[in-house]
Image 1 (cartoon, rainbow, N blue to C red):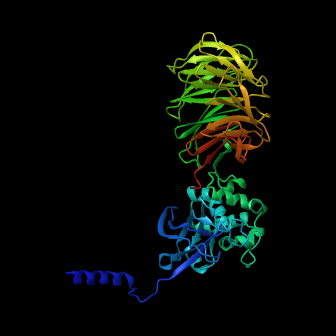
Image 2: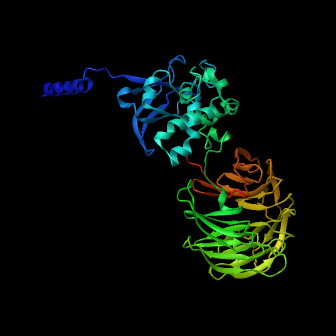
Image 3: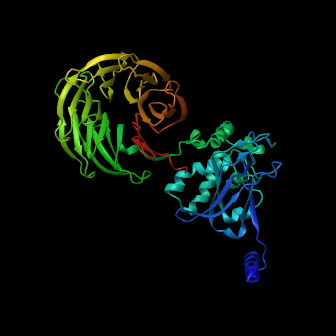
Length: 520
């Protein structure tokens, strides 16, 4: 019996070891280089005509005593079809030439990120032994990520690869007197950095560091805001827009209340427009009701259950001269309304169809915005800074503290800190652990005018009128640090966040939508 089992296993071994067509199994070899990466996972995906990926092969890059031995990977040639399109993804590993000087480092640098390269099957075979996955192929992947996710067409993508290469590379690399994607696949970090566009070469090593750290915001964003997937200039002059399920609702300078469907963020569809005759400063959404701050026309309550046919349910206005309805905030079952020189009004909206005014008060000369937490309201009072109002007894609210800033326009609260959009004063962070004695914790300056602050976990997003959007790390609110700044087509007045989407109210350029996950 044992002899029978022995012969069986020998047969299985011989069967799977033999090539019955008499052909040796050939491999195509490439190199993973940030510097040379050892122990990195290499995955090969075949991409179909719809942009879907199918895993074809897996390998791990080689280690060795010299750079010439490190970073190699193999792809079985019999798994490559000439007319197919592929993505090579290299992740992790250890970088043994961190400064790309062609000399092996004494100690390797841990790589937590990934680099990728698009490639056609016949291209892989033609460049066997010479092609590389590098920062440059990764930048091109990132540059084309919007097209790859939203409008991939295999017949057009080769041209896109060549055009993206010209955006990254400044001089011919392979000696054929032209710049195309082959140059990107043959890029040698220790020799060719000076052949890149200055926007890349000047930042080359900081980009490498971003990949080593697996930055949430990849290097391409320091060159081009390619994650803006939708730009809706025709929507009107927009100060404020909000997400509402699969839609965006907004108001314009000319009094238009608009709704766009954003099931496809790159192809938003206008659904409806209603004109309310006056400037719309702010929009807030509660369930299926959109609440509009309509300047001199008061508050408008629209039922948006059917986005194609929004219905005006209610209007609240006071006919006092000069009263401006500029902002609305919802906290629990109350609606807080900023009314400029008339202060703040508070409404019970337990029944959203029948709001009931509870109190009005004037904490300062002009209120642009407010934030509420617990028993305290924090008012953005323009050139009077921030005022703290005790609302524990809502019938008799009283100002109990404050702090001077340049021009407090927008305000948000998180934990014991208040974040103020202070126009030319940047972002002011205030410690309100003792609300009656607020203390300035830090100031983050921008190059323009900060109109809006939006918080998400340990980050704050700033809408800067002249300078686009700033993303700032606030893990330590007393020392905020810039993560990224990117331009928008117009004038950024407001930022909203929903899942992986950022919505920027872009003034004369309508609104734009940013997909933060297109690089994944």
